[in-house]
Amino acid sequence: MLIDIDFRDKRPLYEQVSDRLEELMLAGVIAQNEALPSVRALAVELSINPNTVQKAYGVLEQKGLIYSVSGRGSFAGGLEQLLPKKQEELLLEQDSLANRAEAIGLSRERLIERIRECRGKTGKEIGKGEES
Image (cartoon, rainbow, N blue to C red):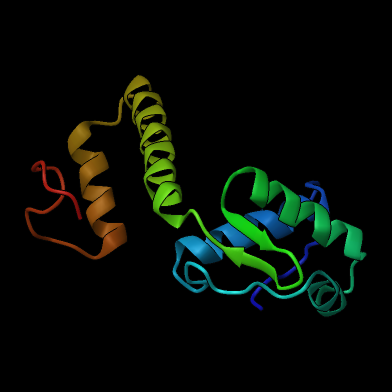
């Protein structure tokens, strides 16, 4: 599993685990209906208390991102709901950032240019109403 715990991070360990699992699901590393590691196995792998992993799984289950099958374990689910929600959150963050940039004098053109630079794109796909 591709989860790293940062003991210097101020976020609780269960939050780091649940956030990372969510990211892995979004990236397609964990597919819908794929079995997640058992609580014990992940706890051993991460060298953390199984209760911490159980709490992370509980958070994800409350969000509808995973589901449990009695005697079988936990599975990724709800991904069709996760991606649009995360995309909307990101767009809201982008709106906020654009407003802050505008407030300090950065032009829309400079912001678009920067996005192109970051994405390595030079065409018309950014800033012309098309999604990329």
